[in-house]
Every structure is written in structure tokens, then in C-alpha cells.
Length: 291
Image 1 (cartoon, helix red, strand yellow):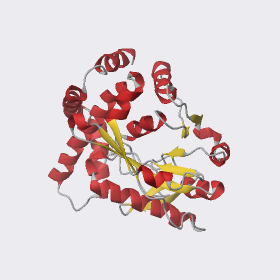
Image 2 (image 1 turned 30 degrees about the vertical axis):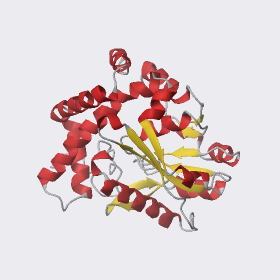
Image 3 (image 1 turned 45 degrees about the vertical axis):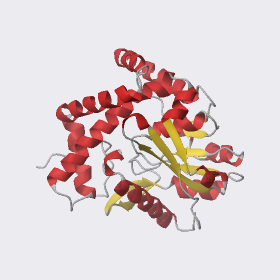
Image 4 (image 1 turned 90 degrees about the horizontal axis):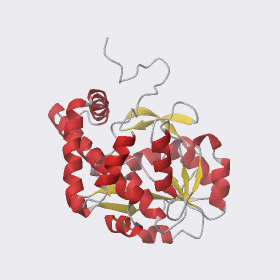
């Protein structure tokens, strides 16, 4: 891990015009050798896009590995480059949508697209917010990650184990929450809500926290752009009539919004994650080998 971090540190001096093709080349190699994650990605794509041919799903999966690998290399810029470089690398669109509701509590809904960390790092070059932080098993990586997330306008960090009460309290003080609720965290605090028509264990925190903090939900989606163009963090209009009294309907609305963004850039969603690992009782995991 230390050697890998040293390599990323060295590479962060390179311009995006060189980092981007290097990252994509590494992604092509990883697609060839990382069998388990390749199979996870292809399984996810088959579940979500059954109408696609095998060759189309494989093409998107290969592109996805190149995008993810490029992001990994470019994390060195987030961790060690001056904030001015990050601000040049990540442009912001739709800022007026957040500014329209910034006089109240706000949740930035940040789905797991590959450029997620780029958007979060761009935010902390100018604004303070709240984030949920998971301690990493590797101590060296944990130090670097924590350094990268706190070296400009340090966010207020909470552990996932802290629960939602301290988060809601911080939101009520006026700090926006950069919230990532679209991964499989198990059955606890989750409902099985369709995602591309497949029941997916989906945490209900967005609806519950929006209600408790009386917060507006402003989606914040980061897209990787070609080569030296970097990334785009786009804020969307605050959701109207949200939350409702129906937590399941609110959670379905969140998944539907993410589906719309995935269809716009399917190669950029985080398909290497086992999104459908937790299953309803009696249902077999799609990632298990066929008997």
C-alpha cells in the first residue's frame, strides 16, 4: 500500500493530459486480470440492462474499468495538489440550485459515480459541509484519505456508527450534508426498493434525515470528462414535495433519480460494488457461482 501511495504521489505532478491516458491504460489491464470485480460488474449490468447484448455490456464494463482506474490515479491531485488545481480540474454547474435553498438545511445527494470524490474535494476547497467517514483498515491509507478530506475547509466528519442524530444536529446548524446512500450496507435500516427493476437493499436515511432536519435535497452528481477536461460537478434543482410521509415512496424516488443519471452515463456508475448482495429472505445472491 505504501508503494502504491508513493506512486500516486509521484504521478500527481503530471498534467491531466498524461494522467488520463495512463489511468485508462491501467484500467484495460485491470479489466483483463481482476476477474472477480469484472464478474461483479458484468453481473450488475446484466441485472440492470437485460435488454443489452453481452458484447454491449462487456464494452461498458471495459470502459468502466478505465474510468475507475483513471480516477484512482487522479486522487493524488485531491490529496496533494494546491486547491487552485482542484478548482480547475472540477468545474461546477448549477450552483444556483443550491444557492436558492442555502438559507435552510440541505442534503447534497451524491450517488456513487466514479468521480464522486472529485466533487466532494471540489466542494471543500470553498465550503464547509458534513460527511460520513469510514475508517480504513490500512493505517497509511487511512491517514492519506483523512488528510485529503480535511486539508482545505475541513468538513464535520461523522462515523457511520454515530447514527443520524448528530448528523441532523449539525445540519440544523446550517451545514450541508454530502450524502452517499446508494450502496448495499446490508438489511439494517434498509428497504428492498427496485433499482432498475431489481429489489435492492436501500437505506432510508435520505427521507428520514430530510424530515428530521427539515432539509432540502439538492442532488450533486460528478461526471468524468474526456482527458484534460477533468470533471463536472452538477447541482440539480431541489426536490419539491420531499420528503413525504411514505418512506418507501421517498426511497423509490431516490433510486429512480439515480437510474435516470445512470442511463445518461452508464459507464460511470460504480458497478464494481455488489449492489445486489443483500437479498430478500430465501433469495440467492446473484454473485454466487451457479450450482
